[in-house]
Amino acid sequence: MLEKAYYHSPFGCFEIIGSELGLMSVKLKYNLDCTETVIPAFLQTCVIQLDEYFQGKRNAFDLKLDWSGAAEFNRAVWAELIKIPYGRTMSYSAIAEKIGNPAAVRAVGLANRNNPIAIIVPCHRVIAKNGELQGYFYGLDMKRKLLELENPMSFAQQGSLF
Image 1 (cartoon, one colour):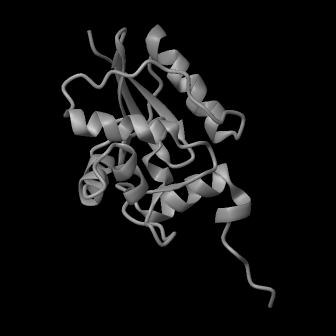
Image 2 (cartoon, one colour; image 1 turned 180 degrees about the horizontal axis):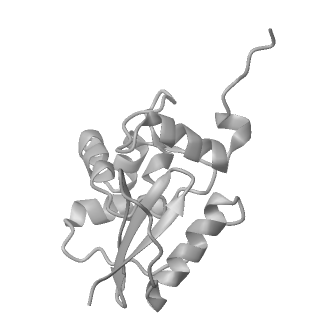
Image 3 (cartoon, one colour; image 1 turned 90 degrees about the vertical axis):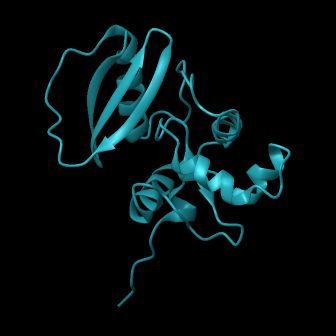
């Protein structure tokens, strides 16, 4: 049976959906009040780990994921995303090569866009081959802030001296 919980993050309210089989969805919901609800036991671990992540106390998630119904290609891409270390990035083309399909750069981007488990399956760690930030379904500002949280030395915005 699918259950739902809400998590209030620094970016807004995330809706978390899953079952005892695993986590199926973590999505930012705009214009949604993050009302207090009873969090099902199998989603409590997700909420705790997200909290630790946003507090800078967690750099890897340990959660069961349920990708049932997803295309095999997307699953292969998402499996590679999970391997990108905290605070690091990888290019779309590097992921295409890792899954054995170097010409599938655009398809990798589409798989990222269709990632149902934001933050935990870290599509925000994927950047353009030239090192520029590209395409994030919650906007480049949020992508930069997530990368800055994970690696402030590389992704922090420079201030002005004057």
